[in-house]
Length: 303
Image 1 (cartoon, one colour):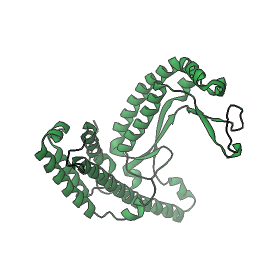
Image 2 (cartoon, helix red, strand yellow; image 1 turned 180 degrees about the horizontal axis):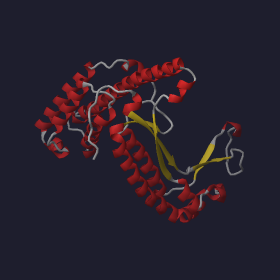
Image 3 (cartoon, helix red, strand yellow; image 1 turned 45 degrees about the horizontal axis):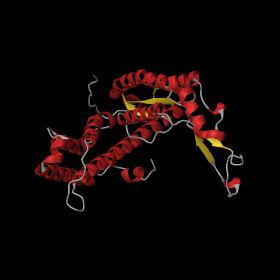
Image 4 (cartoon, rainbow, N blue to C red; image 1 turned 90 degrees about the horizontal axis):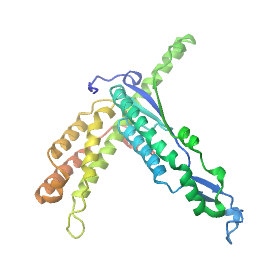
């Protein structure tokens, strides 16, 4: 278990690393030539784009779902940022926890891969019957292709200004170091603004589910709502690059509101539901009043 130590403002290279996550897979759709005789249409074929599904296989869907869920778990333990292409900004304190989760996931995932590989020939024959003249043997992967294609790989990279730049010129090195420091300040603004945005969404969803519908009846309140809230609150210390007292105060209020409260209680006890709803409305009002420098600028970016 990694103990989180709050520290003073550090440079980006001292407080974070970059995780590169690669999730290998096979596709489940293939393009069909719109000029093929198997397509009967009166539409100009040059204006058509046609594809076919290869498998209707629960084993394959389980693999896709596992990778999607894993990526979300990594995102939940990463600093909110606009990194793309499987890159995640991770606080040093979260590295050990995240690496252990990835190692466990890789082992578990290999069993799911074999489960699909073991039935891939059977699923191919089922697809052959369904696809008819659109079936093409070359579109389908073999056992060995499945085993090699589905992978979970990751690497860790440090952020720093290479000291070798100093050999070019001292002024150039100092210029690049200053740019790195400015990038860190921007990353702090990014992370705080996005974390605030996520907090507002979580709180808004909680209030919505605790608010009666138009007829006055309680809405469906699933266990996953409180589970997701707990996961969000537990992950927050791993995801903030610097201490924000106002945000942390609201996170603590949310924890106290849910302390000892079960989803079943919220479904059955009207008074408790109203009290918890009122508490989250107060949290929402406080979050709405928190101003993060640069928040408006960064939150407008399409995620």
